[in-house]
Length: 467
Ligand SMILES: [Zn+2]
Image 1 (tube, rainbow, N blue to C red):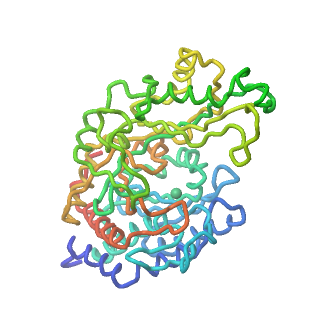
Image 2 (image 1 turned 120 degrees about the vertical axis):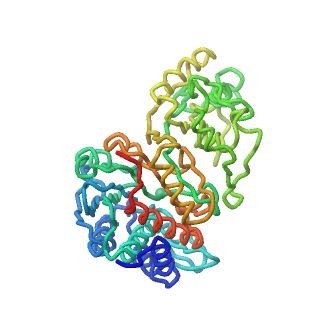
Image 3 (image 1 turned 90 degrees about the vertical axis):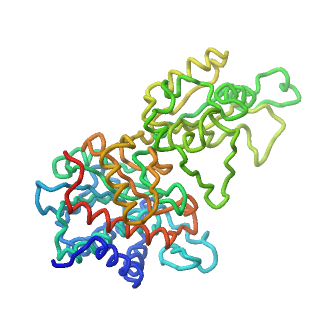
């Protein structure tokens, strides 16, 4: 097509956005109550793929297929292929069409999960940020580029949309492993999770993994009268508190040093995190400078290091205390870790540590990885390529981080497709994505569609990293 230009493609995308066309698309997607956390919604998962996405994708030139999840009790998976020339670069897009439950009655007055409401520069609705709005922006940007280029992209795209992400992406690994040839690509470029702060376009090249375990002190069958036994018999809550105090000091420094990356934060990670802002997300919590690993910056602590968090702990019945020494005390704990630590060390290192502190009666139960860590080198050629493209489109610096602060199944794509990970989030930390009042910031979304129009344009121009 004559006079097709990069600027023209971005202008089309922004026009689509400003005209309300994108908002109408988002309305139609949010209206399908595709939560994967309620059994009754199972038909809506398929409907999201078959009615929400398939007609649109077919119009964009994709060959679409719906697949049952390899695990029977989890939602279906959509694949879509748009192959122009196998010799050209191929990018894999990923998204998830399922959401957490609506929590309908908890949204504030005037808002409701399954209808998009505009207020204060935000689009409220379940899935606006996680993840419907994010993958829809990338596809709407593609639509603009195809229109500008007369229907041609100049590259190949493959798309995977799953519907079990909010249940831990169950079945995705088996599916991708079983379709590795079909899904082979040069890079994954996809969107989920938050920017480092709303104004700062961001590329995340991985995620920290999560390792969970329960610390338990189980001493007797039931509580025993505190008047007789208090002072005579061991209090499990006190033992548990001592155990925790040996794991982390008063300033939040992890004392089980075998849990930590031996070589410290890698140089390439330190380099991209220099000057990286850490947002507070609407004042939801304070960033306490004295908390955590002493010599690290705030960005290094959350994107380049491991953290230990007590998710919940209990002894006795706090809602109804009785005069008794409790039978047991438990703490449910989590380690968030980078690829610089092998998760197999966590449990044995903790056991050695507790034993060395005379805490053999503290049991480690239910220990295991919930979500494996993944990371592409933050200076990988595809990361640099995407960063340069986005900076050209948006006219501002793009922050690269080695780990998203959200959860993403990047490990699946690294393990089975060996693709570099380029996550380009369109949301922010205050988006309330798993609670009531989830929303997408309109200004961030508008930058997102422009950024992706530029990325898709550049993908067809040549000059992408070699295979
Ligand atoms: Zn989510």
